[in-house]
Length: 319
Image 1: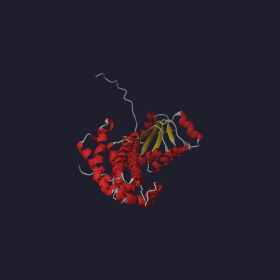
Image 2: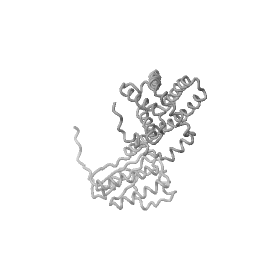
Image 3: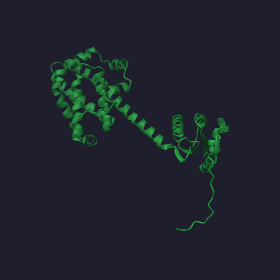
Image 4: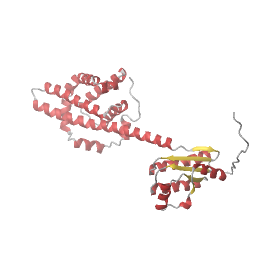
């Protein structure tokens, strides 16, 4: 299976997450991962390479023995790919080089597990299984040197905890990035700018407006005014339960910005609560053209655009 080309994997992910050399050094210092630990791990390299495949095969047999984790590896190609990455990871643990390339690899493992949706509880459990499996083999191989075995295991444990922190950070970072993207998409879908007729737009707003959403509304509206060469905009806030002073001021700024772009704004659907709030917080209502409801707003907008609605008094024949 070909390696993923996700631009946020590897070195790009390292940069995206802001890992500086100082940050890396502080993490190692916090775990007291020092040069003597590096030397001990290098001494274990030949031994570790000998049982790498066996440990990883045992780990994935453990994964496949539970229904919850087996579901992540239904595709045999995915299973073989992840096993291959884990074997490469295992071999890198005792090679004694823990630079930016090494860290990028650890972040990549977290990214892969994020992509398949592996939950943290299974991820942490896998590390527990891994440390136990390695510890058994390590103490058996160094049975005649128990002090050395303990020291080596502690050095390995420091590095594993260092790696766990990196991989979990990558997993959380990517999940939060996905959530932010989803929230942005929801905001865009929840505040569509609709063209009713030539030069007339309606922006219906539903739900709570915070400062971020208010700014996004303004930006989207101004782009639509420019794209549609709009002359009148109806800003309908029937579905807005409340506003604070920041949002109210932003609303006024939206009206002013639209006016500068050549579009008059009619605000419709003010509830009694919102109207009282605007008065209480001292918003200059003279700067807002308001109409009670959306229908009245459309009629006012059509008058501004020079349209005249004439009732057809002729009776309608039943079909």
